[in-house]
Image 1 (cartoon, rainbow, N blue to C red):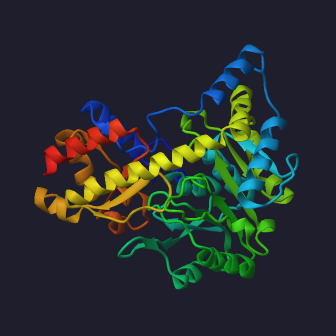
Image 2 (cartoon, one colour):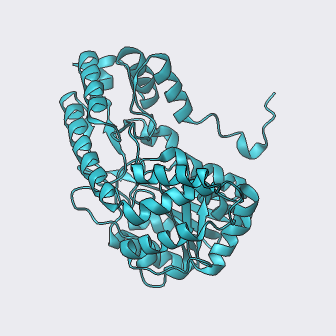
Length: 391
């Protein structure tokens, strides 16, 4: 008998756990879960170790240590040319995932509507369920060379019951980077309907081909109605540290903090001090990471194309959404889930079936998602195994 609360019953064990278990069982190259197989800057790790040895091991303030909040403020000013008060407008969270949950719990009432773009990061929908919110969806559609959504679909999603919209750009899993025009469409609707924007910008630094990232908070009338969320994990290749943040005007920040204080209350102090060091002193590492990831994107994308996948080169994030239609036809398979269960056993490579990120799963059945946030030897090993299995 299922003993879970009804709000959690639609959510099984995450697809990341299932695919990682298959990868481990078959000793497969894990291109499923979006984590790098290399570590971030040594300066940050040394600063965290030094903080532990210097006895920074007790509770920290619920909104985060001053050193990190001020580093975040400077980082964001340089990135987005926006100024936030470190004391009243910045909150350190346990990764961006906790920030999303705290934002929804703090700002959304039961029966309110929250708009999501599909495919979506899986925690969004669960966090909406925690808040008792109803979800509406705007589909990001494939084009010949990328992914996009229409203004008409966006406008249809807004109703008098809409409380918030979650915006993820650069986007996981499609790699789409929203343009200022697209963000302008969202901003217009938010202003017209008095809606809060929750902007998940964890890949803000990871864009390719000189594609610019724009935060919706920089658009007219949007700073006062936007929470900007990000984290250290992706930018500095330390995903297990789970240090994130939320920036926004005091009324929105106060609502998020009211939930954050009862979810985790605070983030480990030594990791916060390590993160402050990286934000202040390790910006060249981010440039180097971006160069490396673009190279791995190109290498993996070229090999997948050679093997019969249809690739739309992502403009940002960690991931390639590969159309597997022709490959699966040769193998006698149909859906993304079938292929992603076949690959670890027969090719010793793991990927993610993105249909689980759609409200309408059929929209994602033609794609599988590969992560290219790996070292070159790892990518080379995956390519070699895929060639042996699929050529």
